[in-house]
Length: 78
Figure 1 (tube, rainbow, N blue to C red):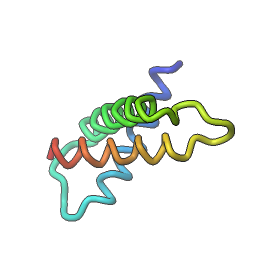
Figure 2 (cartoon, rainbow, N blue to C red; figure 1 turned 90 degrees about the horizontal axis):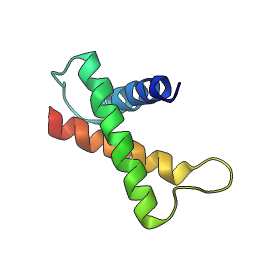
Figure 3 (tube, helix red, strand yellow; figure 1 turned 180 degrees about the horizontal axis):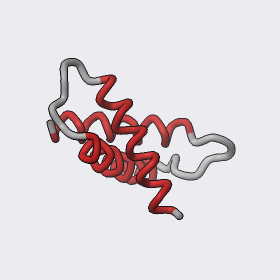
Figure 4 (cartoon, rainbow, N blue to C red; figure 1 turned 45 degrees about the vertical axis):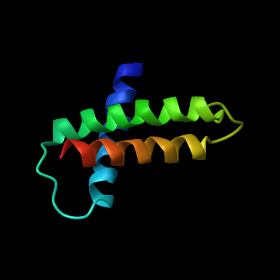
């Protein structure tokens, strides 16, 4: 089940990252999901490095780092 969530979250983060980036990205939807998953993994790693991976309540900082990672990966991958 965690793989299913990773795909869903990766797709959502990838689509949001594409919307944030200016211009048109010429990558297919499946690659957007892959880039979103990679960005999410990158954001989780950064959150762990700075010590905000596990907080009480909603992990807003971790989620923003995941989105930033997805934006970076989509920008580099395009």
